[in-house]
Amino acid sequence: MSNSASKTPHAWLAEHGDYLYRFSLARLRDPHLAEDAVQETLLAAIQSQSYAGQSAPRTWLTGILKHKIIDIMRRQMREQPLQQEDDLPTEPGLEDFFDETGHWADRPQAWGSPDDELEQKQFLIILQECMERLPVKLASLFILREVHEDDNDEICKELNISPTNAWVMLYRARMGLRKCIELHWLGR
Amino acid sequence: MITCKQASQLLSQSLDRQLSWRERLILRFHLLLCDACKRFARQIVLLGNTVKQVFQKIEQDEHLQLPQEARERITAAVESHST
Image 1 (tube, rainbow over the protein chains, first blue to last red):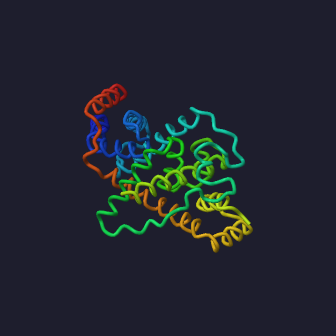
Image 2 (spheres, helix red, strand yellow):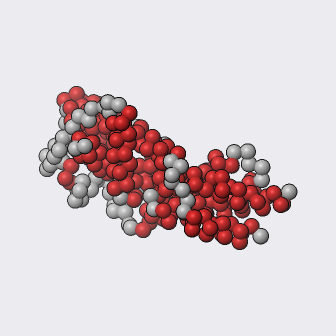
Image 3 (cartoon, rainbow over the protein chains, first blue to last red):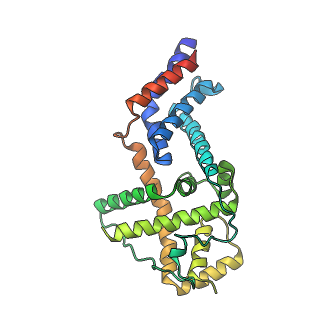
């Protein structure tokens, strides 16, 4: 029993290493952080009580990986102090979306729907590139909310931030992403 | 009456929390009169839905692989913890 158990982490790395890396890279964007997350996951998996006889190793490992990714995201939140924001901030960048009377500086345009598969692919590429341009904290919020579909309370616990901070960052993420996509989609 | 700026904030928040009855009313009234914000509302919903596809693509892209150097480093770490 102990012989086969000691071979298992190597098998996991061989079978699931690439997938876990891609999963991490999509969320953390930094290859070194993604590699660290995979390593942390395998080490945690070895030490876990429940690793023997896992019937769906990839699902189980991905669950551990998600926690490691959130740990990394939470550390990144701490790296710069968040501003106190009960009002939405009037900071450079955000100010530019609206004029002083609260009207759109650049009105959202009609995007049309992608005509065919090629256009759909183009749209996804543009979305991915715009995601990569988002500041790290905003991207993390957006990913947890829109990809993982965690609710606001869960996100606040995961990242150790207030609900107001979460809403502000999600707002900034959506504003920035939308504008970036519009520029590139309409200009293609 | 709310501005487009306020409407955009409420629209974003409506995706993350329940708006109050009053907030929903003033937002709906604004959207009746404002095509720009109607568009904004549709677009941010689209973004949320579409980003999942982007991630699925990345997760399934077999060209994206753990670099060999990282694989070796991780193997060594795993070995030193397995004994």
